[in-house]
Amino acid sequence: MTHTTEPSDKALVPFVSVDHMMKLVHRIGLAPMLRGLAENIEADFRRWELFDKTPRVASHSAEGVIELMPTSDGEVYGFKYVNGHPKNMKEGLQTVTAFGLLADVGNGYPVLLSEMTLLTALRTAATSAMVAKHLAPMGARTMAMIGNGAQSEFQSLAMKAICGIDSVRLWDIDPQATAKCAANLAGHGLRVTACASAEEAIEGAQILTTCTADKQCATILSDNMVGPGVHINAIGGDCPGKTELAPGILSRAGVFVEYPDQTRIEGEIQQMPKDFPVTEIWEVITGRTPGRKRAEQITLFDSVGFAIEDFSALRFVRDRVAGTDLYHPLDLLADPDDPRDLFGMVQRAAPVA
Image (cartoon, rainbow, N blue to C red):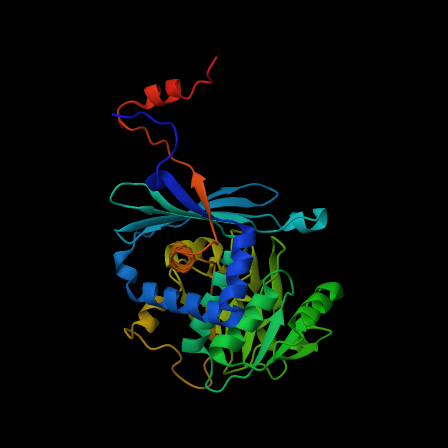
């Protein structure tokens, strides 16, 4: 038997860097990638009952939160590491960073390691638009984007690619954020209007997206601001003590969630009684229950992000980078010729005197 210290191909794990992820977006095209992610997420929601499901494991601090989000469909295991630190922006750092992994359930070996800061932005937007496709009023063409931070452009372009909106109305407490978002959206086929208030932004909009960063119970939309027939995509309330909507809106709306056990801790419905009625969105996608029941109904997607969406996104990346130059082979796993001889492998790696 030969005894080498070089890793075999089976021990090299594909690693998709930030640079690779950006190249993948441009190679596929942003709109096709958003649609592809949405298709993967919807396909996995259709087999929702196959997955392991648990609220994410969170470590909270005064500054923010660090979370692990695991799931498995019985054949592939996946998890994401993600943080949320609103104060980071003032220090020139990202509010959210992330990476993720897929592994073979059969042998436990990782099969993909990937950056997920960019991928989370893409999958969050794809999820929002996929759900809006099922819940938004027929013929919706205008979206209000309240909160113009790092997620805003992705949300706007996903709604265009998947739901067909052609107009977006922007507002942020920071005018510079709105100017940044408007400049980035120029040339992407959307009519963009910068607004002076949240009230102005929602005028004439059929889809209202809220995505603010401050970790507090805020009232971005008050009850009297929201009229009948709109769809609210609430994605900013994503941890305990962080909400964006007045409780009265929730009382008037049909509320749809990813995984109730997690959303009741982190979402807008943390403000409501523990038995507050909600509908799991997978039930709408599979046809088990109706989504929008009446034209005048307010629908609300109380989105906090769930591990299955990350699993779907990682699965998409795994399939798209296979056979390309868009990953690094990473020497992540020890691979001795004799699986029992890990120590011997270390010994043989000693430098020659």
